Each structure stands twice: as structure tokens, then as C-alpha cells.
Image (tube, rainbow, N blue to C red; front, top):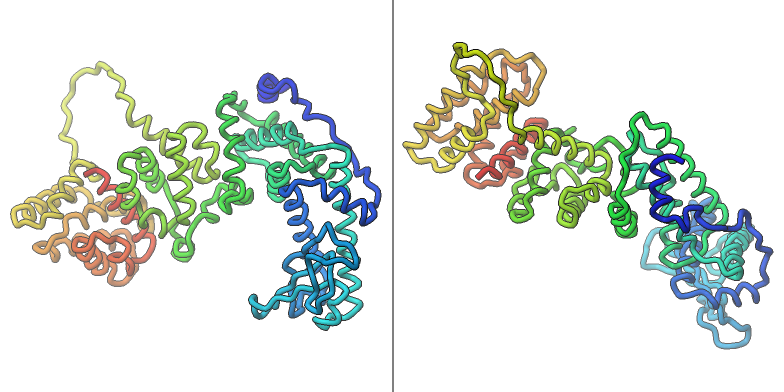
Length: 504
């Protein structure tokens, strides 16, 4: 047995084999009387899940009929009266007042407020749908009813939701999260099982077999992984198991997105239009924000693009905020992040820990050392400049410009044309920090020089940047001040200005 499976077997020895379940549908076609008899034994939650999935199947079947794809009316739902008796008062009626056991609700495609409630045999009378199409719809609905007879048969055989299979399936999902290239699990199957679990309803035998197949696929990939998987902790898995019900239905956790190594599914329309994507700097900042719950409101307000609303979809940022408050950046936190954010934040955390380690002490013979040039990215120097820059007092302005000259004296060496890397944006950022009303012209010259040496072709960009910085000094609203500045300058500078405010 593989180690990760051995671990699971030790945790849950009594149900490791996931329990017995029929391998095929043993149901025969029930009569309407038998069907209603079993239906009455279902709980309200079980009736709701059966009716909901029947509704989806009927809607899909209607869309597969070419006439209905272009028809004026679209299917909404089907209401069922299990207590219907011909000749007695009924719960549902057609628009022509005939009592109905099965009432179909249709909506006008052109106006959602226009709704028709009627029996399927009356589609032709009241909606003008050809009788041939009505017969096709009726045959499709009958076929769906027969398929769902399997669930009624399973209930009659006293089967319930296969809990042991579900836990083993979640464990496979949990292990899949650790794979370098996760297996693309069936998201619709996952959500269907979750719905059936919440209603304690037995699942289709085909779904049971498909789940076992997906578990086997993940076991095979985990066994063949180049690096052995880390041994999980039972408590961590059980947190994950409990949280699955809460997060699985969020659009954020559609499997196609959850295991996607790209940021594309999570970007706003603005970010996609401007080709602005989270980078290393973004994740370093995000990590610091997530690590400061006591200053959360302030930190999040100053995070790039106003809490992510400009760059990353707000619901993604909000989810990470809530998750970090529940799990303080431990394995529970990372297990429940989409792959793209998980990798970015883990890398930022590794870099943070490496930077915090004391440098090894080594004994070396003394030798003359030239004075180290002032480092451009020094946070202390940048903060000093920033505080001077904000005060706009004459003495502070003069001091800031003197400091500016020291900072940039070695930083205008030719940049490789076309490579707007982090060094370039650090230079650009510190140049803008030195701006004050007394030195705008003096700042503009080296700014233009930096842009020219880096082969930046945007017309009037230097003037735009200076005007935006001046506006930001007055308003402290980066998004509004820099709205006219093109990407990637907007994105990179936003991250640096926001980061600087966290150093105060």
C-alpha cells in the first residue's frame, strides 16, 4: 500500500474499503402509484434534490430539441403534486383551470415577468408549440422519470448516501492538491455528490463507479509522483473535509480554475484589458497584508488597486482575507487556495523566511573595502524620503532633493532596451518619491533620461507620471490619480506606493 493510502487506512480503518453498493441499476419501471408511494417516504431535502436535478435534466432535454432552442418560451421548472387524485381538488392547475399532477412553468424569452403554468399536453393549445414537438418533449420527460426511478429503487432497498465513499473521495481531492500537475476531476460530479450528501440521498450507481475511477486515477498519479508526498495530518484533512461543503460551490472553486496555474481566471476585466497580472511583488505585499490581522482594515485599504478590486476579482481577495483569519497561514490555509495563489504566496513566504535568517558568520582576512553605494531599494531611505515628501516643508524639500541626488547618482546607467524589470521600476518609483513643488523641473530631466535609456516609447509619459504623482500628493487616491497612466507602469507603481504606506 502506498504511504499516503496507508495513512488514510490508519485514520479510518473501519471504512477504508468504502462499503458495499450496487454495481448496476436494479430498478424496474415503476407505475405512477409505486413512484408516488416511494416519493412520499422522502424527506423534504431529498424531494428537493430529486426535483432540482429532474428540473435540470428536463431543461437540458428541451434545449436539445432544435425547435425549443429558438422558441419564444423557455422551461423554468416542473411542479409535482404527489397527492393528486383525479376528480378531487388539486394543488396545481393549468392556465385553463384544469387540475394537474405535473405542472410545467415556462417563461417568455423576451420578458421574464411573463410566465405560463400548464400541463405538458396543453403546450400546443396555449403556446402554439407543434404537437410533434410536444410528443418529443413528453417522451424525453418520461425517459428522465425512468432514470430517476433508480434513486427511488435505492431508497426502497434502504440505501443512503455512501458517506465512506465521500470521505475517501475528499481525501483523493486533498491528495490531488499536492500534485505538481493535478488531475482534472469532474466538477459537476463533485457538486452533485455534495448536493446528495446534504440531503442524505443515495447516488446513482454510475456516479458511484465514476467516483471510484477518479479515486484510482489520483492514486495512480500520486504513486508515480517524482517527489514523495508529504505525510498529511489527520486534523488538517478533517478541517479540509469540513470546509469542502462551504467553499466548493463558490465560482472561485470551479475545478478548471482551482487547479489552473494561471492568474487569468481570477483577474478583473480591467486587468485583462491592460495585461496587468500579479507578480512576485504583488504576492510579497499580499503576504504582509495577510500577516497583519490587527491592522487588517488599514492594510487592506492601502493594498494595490484598493483591496484587489482593480487587479484581482474582489470575491477572490475577500475569500483569502477570511481564510487567513480562520487559519493563520498554516497548511489549512494553503490547502484551500487555488493553485495560482497557493504557489505565489508559498514562494513569498519562503523568501520572507530566508531573509529573516541571520547571515552565517565567517572569519575572513581583513581587506580594504570600498564604501558601498547607497542601495536604491533601501526601505529606510525610501521611507525617509516619503515622509519628507509628504510634509512639503521648505527645509524638508531641500533635504529630500539632496537625498535624491545621492540616490540616483549611480542609478542612471544604461538599461537594457525593452527590459522593464524590477530594477527599472524601483528607479522610477524613487524618482517620483522625490517630487515636490520646488524641484518638478529638476525631477523631470532624470525621469525623461531614465525612460529614454530604457527605450520607453510612450509619448508624454514623464509628464503624465509627474502630474499623477502631484495629484496623488493632494488626494492619496492612487487609482484616480494614476488612471491615465498606462500598464504596466500603473500596476507596478501601485504596488510600490501601497507597500510604502505599510512601512509607516
